[in-house]
Structures are given as C-alpha cells and as structure tokens.
Image 1: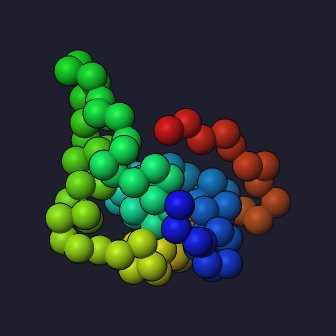
Image 2: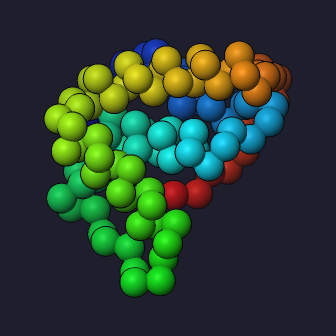
Image 3: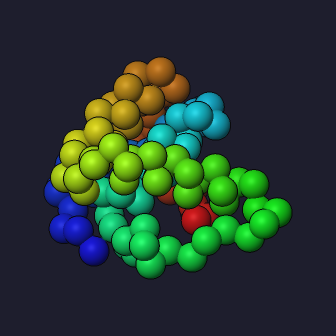
Length: 104
C-alpha cells in the first residue's frame, strides 16, 4: 500500500461530501485515481471482475489505463486531489454532510 499524503486523505473524505453526484465518467476517474494512489491492492493482485460484471470491468479498465500510462501512486494522489477540488466547485461541497458509505 502506498503511503497517502494528508491532502489525498482529506480529498478522499471530501469526495464523499459533495452535494450532488458527479457523472459516471468522473466517478470512474475518481475510482481509478484512488486505486492507483492507494495501491490497496496493487492492480496485479486485484481480482478480475466476472464475465457479466460490466461495472467492475469499466472500473478496472479505467484503473488499467493509468497503470499503462505509467502514472505513479504519487501522481495519482495529486491528480485525485485536483479532481476533487474541481468537483467541489462544479457540484458543491457540504463540510457538515454526513459521510456516505462507499462501496468498492
């Protein structure tokens, strides 16, 4: 597991406090950057989605694109923080919002 910067850890929490849901493409970006940034587990050790798990295939495909582009965990964390800041501006942010449970 890659060590997380304080800004990354804060952005992960803030991503769950947006006042509106981002688009599916933005959610895929968030997922891929989070997985590459946290390396928990590394993509080689992550289970492959089932044959009919289209959502799982899209998520792993987005993550694989980052790996193929040689994005380091540190770069992924920085890009994640930047994306969350952009989403906060676009969708609103409520610091007092109760954190929602997020599934993998």
